[in-house]
Amino acid sequence: MSERYDCTDPDGRAEGIPAAASAVRRGDIVVLPTDTVYGIGCDAFDATAVASVLAAKGRGRDMPPPVLIPTARTAQGLATQVPDYAQRLMEKFWPGPLTLVLKAQTSLHWDLGETNGTVALRVPDHEITLELLGDIGPMAVTSANTTGDPAARTVDEAVGMLGESVGVYLDGGPAGGGQPSTIVDCTGETPVTLRVGALSQDDIDAALEPEPELEAPEPDPSAGTSDTLGEWHDVSTDASSDEASDVSTADGPSDGSGATQ
Image (cartoon, rainbow, N blue to C red; front, side):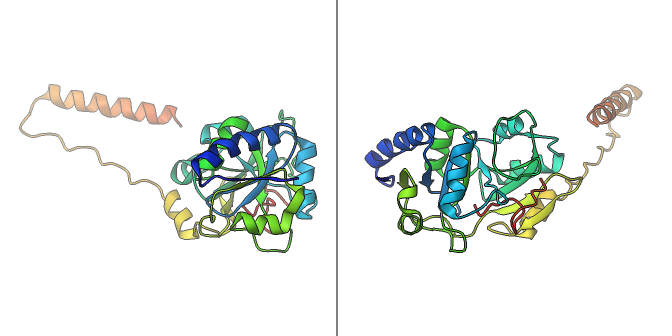
């Protein structure tokens, strides 16, 4: 029998999140609200539970679920070779409706499906889910619907499609705008948008525009001494030295990662 908790009520939330955490730890799957649509998920490191998520949706291993994480820092332990442009996208849009496909750490003991060595990561902008992620850690989460049906925007819609296959339902009220996250492949030298969702291509492009270079300040004529100019040249030289020293794709579903979150 599935359990359902009204997390729009403080008491229901206080009971529901620990109940969902316990369900995830024992290998059950849960439905939770996000800032895009409702998601169905489990412990990302429990291969049997991941298989249950895919089975509940009627989806195969060729459509692996993305992984929701509590903070951008978590990505460093799950992904490798994270390019600078991906870091900029994380800083701009996380938490938020952006999924980044990155090369996965080869040492991880998980099985998300046929990922081709990649992982799709996102930090959702929803306090209920972030609280659960902070307790559980990374969760494999995809949209809470059966394959071919619209993604659930309410917990009732999720219950209608997924029924008793889910251990715990967390009701957080209607989900965000109903659009899935935008997915960007960050496994190459340049980003490739796999799916435009809640973030437009213009949003992505604007975040990746290079910052304007700052011009060197003009010397102050009133200072007029060689010492002052010498000090300015020293600063310029130091800055140049510092600058010199600083110098998946998931082939799967139509969105490249199996994600509809």
